Amino acid sequence: MQAPDGTRNQILRAAFDTLEDKGFAAATSRAVAERGGFNQALVFYYFGSMDALLLAALDWTNERRLSAYRAALADAKTLDEVFATAARLFEEDRESGHVTVVSQMIAGSVARPELAPETLKRMQPWLELCEQTLERVLGTSPLAQALPTRDLAYAIVNFYLGANLLTHLEGDRARADELLARLRALEPLASGLL
Image (cartoon, rainbow, N blue to C red):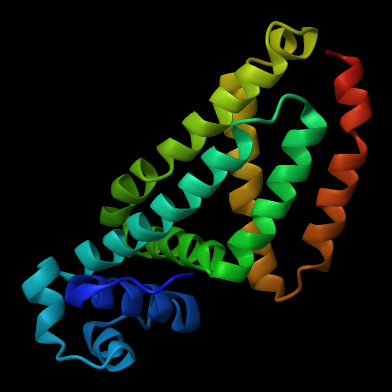
């Protein structure tokens, strides 16, 4: 992921990197400052609290990845195109650290329930993008009528988050990759329902 510019963005990048490498529990102002090479007082000067900084780091990565998804999915017209694009983007998410940071913030929200509403709010654009893409691709097909796109989008985002969390826990991507390949193999069946 491209490094941000300026002091505020330097702090954001250090928070992102700390979440990715050390996890939520170790993402302290001291750890972030050490990672970024700045005085830890700057965390509070620019963000007010560690919670605000960590949520801003989640916003930072979400904005970049959402832009990539929107651009890549804009021209997808078939489920096969959506599956292929989503698989490529999912791999980019893992390589960029986005998956790990999202997983860490969700885990942190379990440990610190006061973060849950704000973290959940940051998942809403993903649900909306997924629903819009499904509405465009599925249209009024029998599949869309059998399972409303809103529910299907919710299931897909839940799968994405769950697969990320399990992959992180297992430390092995092979099962998630195999599952994605199997889901992609089901595309002809789903297309038949269109």
